[in-house]
Length: 413
Image (tube, rainbow, N blue to C red):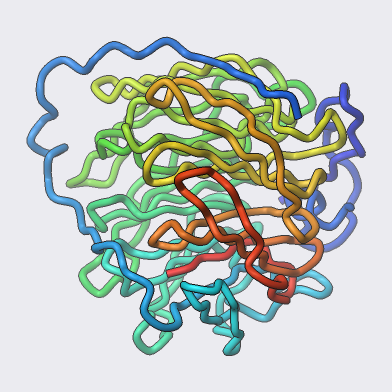
């Protein structure tokens, strides 16, 4: 896979094209990590109400785990790069106190190369990791004994995100380098079967400064009826219908950002009718309307991230379970932007920012009970923890950050 670098960007510059080879296996995504407000309101129209019931296949039960109450240490897994200087040697193993947020390390799970993004099966028994390499793969790990159950090829290059379909039967992965998305079946043991589908984004053409598609996320809509792929390279969010019996994808809609926005990460409001899109390249977020019956996403106007116009690359956005607040990880500004979610999810109002306590927050995640927020800081090699007040939207640092080599993903269970 060709490597890429991004030139230092001023407030008006867009993403540059590919440059030289700074090191083996280094993609633009890795170089971003290695290289070193006033309230804003945006409203999108309320999407039309869905007509008719979902087909029977869309109403099948989901494999879910009841929310856990804080009771003793809980597991924390940390993703890293194993092929870079100063990186880790596998998936970091740790535990956190759900009351205080304090993290204690307990070792490393080796045998998984470049596990830069992690996800867990809905039944809590199997961990999945991307192998972010030119010959991309996805790996399953049984948590009971931490046994690696095997790796399957994604068919693409540089996988950077994965998620498990709510039924627990399919693994969805996004290949950044090749701009493709893949589906793998999950058997009763949690192990992965051979890939059932692979789709490469070929239309529309790449956005300004891009040399090709760059799939950055692949997730399921709250209603379970569609799966959506966010592609930074084509400035597009693709909606697919997943055939749950065969594991194949059928494209049903496309939603386009403004040229050069570089969409990276989408998260849904708990109500299921709105979503929020973090745009990496132009340093904005956008409120989106979502129509469950058709899977169509409507992207609203871009709004500010609280970075003040400096060099900043929004990474990931989360919404509290009560739907009242949203938090955005700002890489460069090194902050967490706080938003009030209003009008039933149709509006975001920027409340301000909180220093993340680390350098380049690549990914953020809530604890299962939503009382803690974890931020994986790539350049400082730390995981910061915050107490979340879901009534006020306030974030309060939970002690000193936890040191972990090139921390690019934190997964609390």
